[in-house]
Amino acid sequence: MAFGVKIAKGDAYKRAAIKRRHIRVRKKVSGTAERPRLVVTRSNRHMVAQVIDDIQGHTLASASSMDSSIRGVEGDKSAQAKQVGALVAERAKAAGVEAVVFDRGGNKYAGRIAALADAAREAGLRF
Image (cartoon, rainbow, N blue to C red; front, top):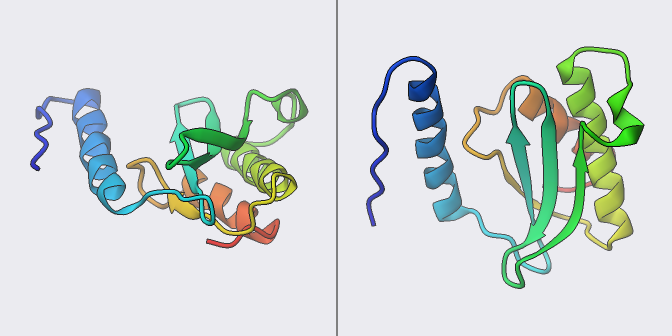
């Protein structure tokens, strides 16, 4: 099945490119009970990470840069992304999740996305 995304100018073009990549990623990546999907959502200011079982449609764990434990932390956005990755890994392990499949949400694997993934790996979550 083909999905068309309208080509636009400027920032809308970037959003369309992210949407195209996300569609490509989601064709291949799906979370199960054994290996749920670690979804990363990025905005200009914040990061959100969720561990989702797609078969049941349940969120098993989540963390955000808007959480009270991360909100007032010093550092740049990459440092906040690292803390979000460590927090989501800690919460996922508390929920009994050891391994996940990584869904970068159509974003390129660089910068804050890579920092979050590396921090989650260091906290003991397997990809």
